Amino acid sequence: MKDQPSPLRETDDEARKLARVLLRSARHAAIAVLDPETGFPFASRVLVAIDIDGTPVILVSRLSAHTRALGSDPRASLLTGEPGRGDPLAHGRLTTQCLAEAVERGHPFYERIRTRFLDRHTKAKLYIDFPDFLFFRLKPEQASLNGGFGRAYQLDGNDLIIQSAANEEIAAAATAAVRDLVERHPDVAERLADRLKAPESGSWRICGIDSSGFDMISGDFLLRHEFETLAVDADHICSNISKIAYSIP
Image (cartoon, rainbow, N blue to C red):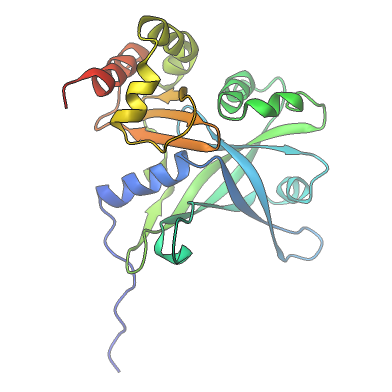
């Protein structure tokens, strides 16, 4: 009997980029954890932000079932990717298998993650500082990408992480850099939305930068743009953004 051909394609740079965009452009995701009492998978929905190194971050209540499960077993899977019109299975989605690390007040990453989360989810300001809420960083271990029918790939966790020595420096300068960029170019978000063919919506704003790209948000829409090469500092990121917004097509 002949061996069956593998359903997986060879993972290339195009697949890696699609996977990163599916993960980094997600405002929410389905999370699957292991119920500590029964061992059964338990699925829920969580809001998602992205840390400076590309690691997905969630904010959860200690009272929720998935938080208790992660406290018992840090293994989790995150499903990202929005279905569009027609058959939902024709649209790209990414399952990322992760190890969860709690980030509570006093953690070295806490303030950075809090700021980046609120940049995406402004309404979370109503409850983000409640004592029963905490963050988890979900470190990618491996991932399964389905880019649509016949486009399946297996990825390593490192394919989703931003490998840059400038991450910490960029994180410290990010808020000021974006503020200065908008002060110099008040219409920059509008120009970017036009150039990147963003969905028609209300006003857009830049809601996050990192050495790999930037995020924009408007209402329920989130747009992720990845640079061709890693930026070396916050000024480099803003220079890249300006070129995209104001260069001649």
